[in-house]
Amino acid sequence: MPILERLDEPGFLSRDPVATRPHVSFTIYDEVTLALRHVRHMDFETILTGQQLLFRGLGFLGIYLFFLAGGLTRLEAFAASALFHLGGALLGPAVLLVEYEPVPRAFALPLTFLALGLFAQRRPFLAALAGTLAFLYHPPTAAPFWALLLLSYAFDRRVRIQTRATFVPLLVGALLLANLAQPQLGVVEQQHLLGRLPDPLAAVQLFRTKYAWVSLWAGHDIWAYLAFWICAMWALARLWPGLNRQWRWSVLMLSALGILSVPASLLLLERMHLAFAPQLQPARWLVFTIAMCSVTTLAAAIQAARQGRYWEAFGWFLPALAIPIRIRVFDLFSITQVNDLGPLAVWLAVSGLAAFAFGPAASRFRAFALPAVPLLAMFLIPASGVVNYPKIDPRPVNEVAAWAAANTWGSSMFLFPDAGHDLAPGMFRARSLRALWVDWKSGGQANYFPSFAAEWWERWQQTMEGPFTVDRLRGMLDLPVDYYVLRREHRLAPVLPVFSNQVYVVYDARDLRKSSTSLRDGTDD
Image (cartoon, rainbow, N blue to C red; front, side, top):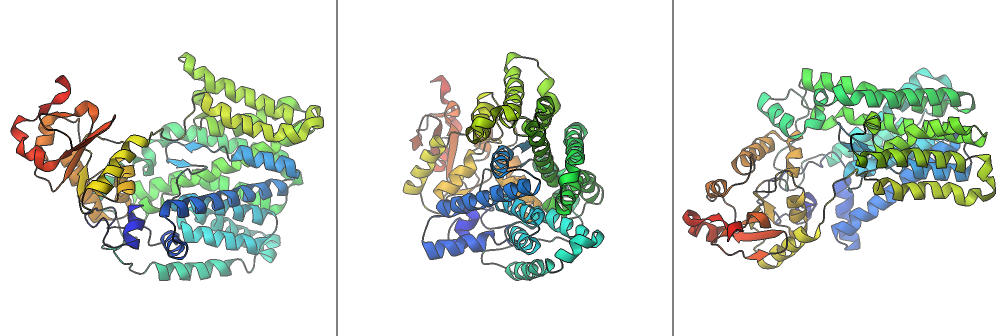
């Protein structure tokens, strides 16, 4: 949001390092959003939410078409696509099967699913158009689809005959993207994709973006991903006789590419230190291994249930429904307290219910039973204690943002010195259009700009590293910060806040400087 606001109005957020270093040059995300704002005169939140809903719907259509090509009926394909879109959080690479924020990847991934569905339906040119649009929104996310198209073209003569013209849209899209990547208004630093990562930059990225360094998580998590890959291959073998070549190629290539992306990331980033690797983040292609496991096991489960093989169907639903419940599937069996029983019980119950609903015993009320399965799962999974995204109450920080927007200068600088890794400061910046000195979320931009990484790291160490204390606050009062926002449990004395609510207190930096020698913890008053 701060990047878009500054690109739209260059006078906004001129003191905020995130807003002044936009990293959307190699996407059409900003151009499309800004064009819609100028044409429709809507706020950014409405425009981004509208795009997210549109592309989420197209992604649902893509998976639906993929299931249809796999031999499911229309109703079965609809219910299976709904089960697929229960989502899943890929721990380690920190990516979601269904993104909940309207970021470029959240637009490109559903478009890639649409491209896969059209490819499986033998509509290669339409698939290429969808894949090109995905590439324009987020090239790293769309790259596996184009790798699939290239390899199937190279090694399968029957597919090659149908896909001769599919690379024309990609060429046009690449030329368009190269033109759009020219220096933009407000961009103060260009991204350097070639060359090697300097050691200081690598150290900052290792601290802030651990998910890109597979050696930190693959030793534990890779076994779960390998288990899902094995399930995908096993299910594919069961379905093989009734599948077309495009379906087979999609599952084989994309599921393998996801697994191979882990050693590729280890080589490119941690061994060779190539500068483009942190931006490409190939390990996030594991999302395609999970996606292919979901579609193959769901298709195998529904096929088995349709033939009355309920226990086999139950077994295939288990990996499919483990994805939205817990990617670290083996952890479901590690029961150390009563709370651990909830996800396990829901996993087994929904899998059994799904096996029954798709079987011949429920054929009389099939039109109601099949949609009921994903609908019930949508409520039972979070009720069992599964949380795949941060739980944040936005109201307190939105109140601070509303106060700041109405009562402070547009160039004011804010700092949340006790926020730590909390996401609230970034929400404040987006709502208030006020600059932040530093916050945890913005540190992810260290993958793009060396100068930003150095500046962010220096500011983080100055103000946020370590626990908050009054003495630490005194040491940062010389910084060009205009307002300090603390959680209520860290309120100060004897200075009165200029704003407070049930969670936060806001102090004017001038008041703190005047009383710096007498500042103390106000919770004892």
